[in-house]
Image: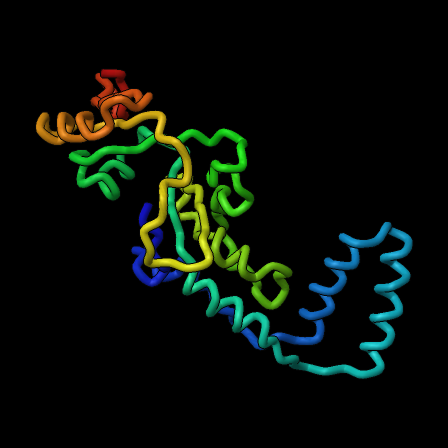
Length: 221
């Protein structure tokens, strides 16, 4: 698999979020209180937050430095992203990412075993949002930056496997269970690909127009 860095993506906002304002004490308190709520029971958390609030109120600061945020944003630019989709029949996806329906789609096994990287915690769905994330209040900036996209992209139903370094060729993350050829795939391409995986337990399919609908159906061949 090829895992590119985000600078090659067709969406300039992808993995490249930026804070809109300087971080304030209030933002820092929001993050801290979120962590406290995760670590303590309700009564204990309430007591700790009250003490911190009183202390900060006595020593107000309008802006605070956040070197960790800058470091996380820079680190994300070096990450490798292997993108997949939940859907195998989206017309736009076939047009944009499969050579205008002449290419093919690979189906992977996501079995929950140690050797299968698609069952790893760093492989999960992208969250599509209408509101731009407030990075000054996000606890895990790296996570939000790598797994959040604008709502406009929701049709992709994307899943991502993230690696620490991009622009590399790595072994396949999981066994291939099927290959789906586009409706405009040539006979030569289909034969070449099928012959290249002879002996493996792989099913073959081809996309076709669904009669009377703007839709693609997947048929076994």
